[in-house]
Image (cartoon, rainbow, N blue to C red; front, side, top):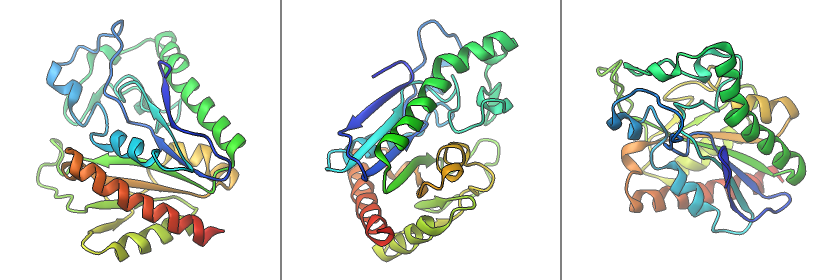
Length: 242
């Protein structure tokens, strides 16, 4: 484990690489975001439930994961480095005073967390040539900024221009039965897909983006359920792409 990322599982060429941009809610001791403590475990800080799913998946041969080790409030790894939202000053109605940074402070934050993570991810893809990259996230059923909007999907599949593996993922998830599957929901990968755009679309690497609803995976039983669902889905996609 480093300050920017951890690796779970054993590397294997041609396997499946799991990417978890928002795995951790950790805030380094030397950074004061100036927010009430309850928001440090809120959905604005990380993607609850998704890191345990990734770790469970990597207990299987052929699965490796890279997971962030700092809160998305420190730096949002699923953004572009020159994008304002890579270091948010407010998120879902919560102000983040400690993120009002000078240009120099902002660059130092990126150099410390963003760049090492993306460099390592790029190297893993180049070295292992995975059959599939699976970018895993979780989403909140409701937002403070839009409490009237329901987000009822159990799981969503995100993508941008590359559609082959995502279409397969939607098909295989629907075949699981009992799942409400969102196609480009709760939001579109055409709008928010920075990590996969940079690391996969840009080089023709097959990938899927997945969003699981947080209230379904806060407990171990739900995490195990969705780990098994995603293992079956990824294995079927790998076979179909071969």
